[in-house]
Image 1 (cartoon, rainbow over the protein chains, first blue to last red):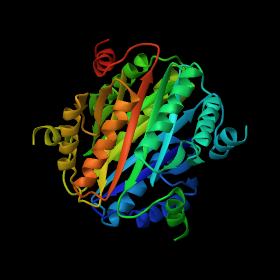
Image 2 (cartoon, rainbow over the protein chains, first blue to last red; image 1 turned 90 degrees about the vertical axis):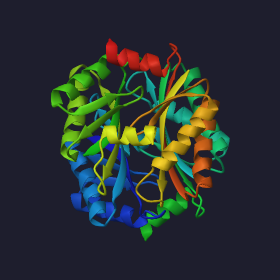
Image 3 (cartoon, rainbow over the protein chains, first blue to last red; image 1 turned 120 degrees about the vertical axis):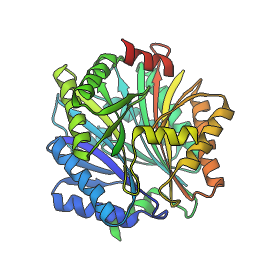
Image 4 (spheres, each protein chain N blue to C red; image 1 turned 120 degrees about the horizontal axis):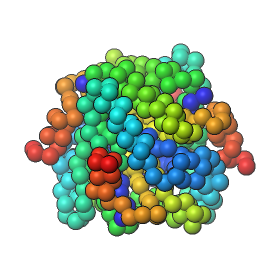
Length: 97
Length: 97
Length: 97
Length: 97
């Protein structure tokens, strides 16, 4: 499993981004991936790089459809080969140990 | 209020970072700032840039004391002047609307 | 054109990352994309999200082949629809204007 | 020496950020720190966390003075204790070796 977090910042559309954030959640829901909204970014868990990147491209295309002319996307990816990870295992480990 | 998220990646200490993450939570607790652990980074809310940066410097110095020889820190800061923000207001807005 | 920058941090392999950075440059060269090495990340220019993500996945798989057990990748993407951008246009504009 | 890179994205001011980028370069010049403009972010080299954070706070305050109502800042910091690093040493190592 790949765990990542990402944010997409719309430029040129005012200071509020909430309607775009909600549209991205909609895409994440439709895609069937596990995700956890955060105050600065959204955590997401996917089976592959392909699935992760597919969702992020869709999020960008959705914002473009909504009229955003420039989008800055930030992604952090944790690709781990020595053990299986998930959003839950990463949170559990750091909080409860 | 400034809302930010950050992560500190130790290099050269093995693939697991949990003990360092826990040490950083300890510093955040001692500093009295509001923070929310996430799977990829920690959200934090501070009164000023100074308070934010103070905590991040302390986190780096703590890891160095624990023997980490190289630390890559990533920080995202939301500095908003048109309205007051907090971790709670940012989460509430994006989830419940 | 999409302009992006990315870095891939190997965990658990010592404090030096140079051999991995060089391996990633090799992948970028083979892929035929325009890229500019920087001190903290590599700037890259691609025709599509697909091409960008393809290169980043290859970079991760290459490091895994070289024995890295955990890789943290950070990507920043500038997706702009109101005008064509390139690494050169972005640098030119900010430096010489 | 600490090597870092950062970008400050103005929200609510149109799709172009060049005048803000130029204002930040001016602050970097006045601060006397070594910096290298890049297409997606600016690399910077400082003697301490304090100097780094001071410059980034000044950059945010400058954009606020120019009327920007929301600024998203991204910072990546390389804090290395096993050897001295600089922008030049990091570039040299990765390119010419």
